Image (cartoon, rainbow over all chains, first blue to last red; front, top):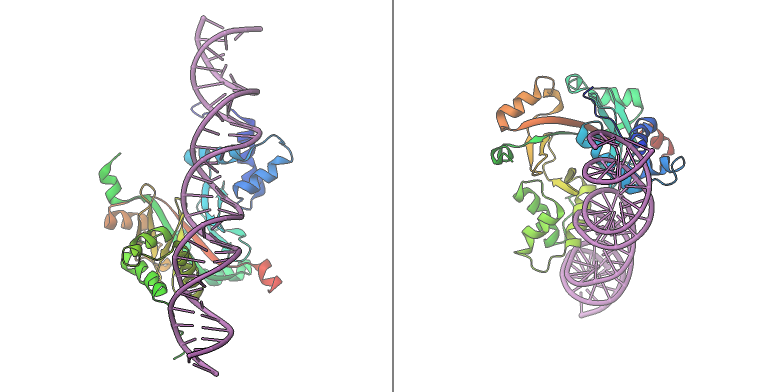
Length: 134
Length: 134
DNA sequence: ATAAGAAACAGGAATGATTATTGTTTTGGA
DNA sequence: TCCAAAACAATAATCATTCCTGTTTCTTAT
């Protein structure tokens, strides 16, 4: 009842493309993928809807790699592996609680990848911004 | 002995600026900071040297936030907290091994920040790229 | 059903961070 | 000192993303 409807077919197509593609696509990749079925789709529409979904908490950004922002519709707790060469992004079903024991070895064994480094970033509102209270 | 010398005063200035500033600066911020002392410094020189340092493993990228890449000269294992409002970046002296117990509460208590989410990303070379072996 | 207002859209221009290019200056070794 | 390589300034070019304008589609109340 309290669910707001998505009014637009194109908006829903953008959302579905992310999970269908499953490859943590960029805006451009989503656009290219959908253009086949929706010839009058515009890249601006993809960008606009991506930012709508981000604000809704329906998708999240995995980060910017090789100059392009990459998106994920899977909001469950999981990590990612980013290939530094081809910028493929793989889901890693590890959560923070499971990280303590030899993550690298596990990832390398299960994904055949060579982990060179990892980054842990927290997002939120810092102390000084909380003071401003806008 | 095997240490390669930095041939350029400007190159060294760029490196020192990152640790002096300590705020995980962007290329632009480094440039603005140095321009006072080095009026004939060019932004291109900052970018060029940043990529040299990245390849050398002397600095690392914390990520791209608000469209700008942010850099860190502290190569030791630690995490970061990114303010979603002002894009300040704070060092978090937690490593992966310490993550399992109530990270959020600890960060909130010690930094007065409100942690809304976190992201864990691994970097390396994926299985299919390793096959190509270039 | 339909008119009015709101939301969504396409197309294209604008922005802005980063990268590439070109010609010049500096550097360190022969 | 001289030469080749590295570094540089200045500026043009890229390219992902955002913004703008006018148009279309949707929603709701009449």
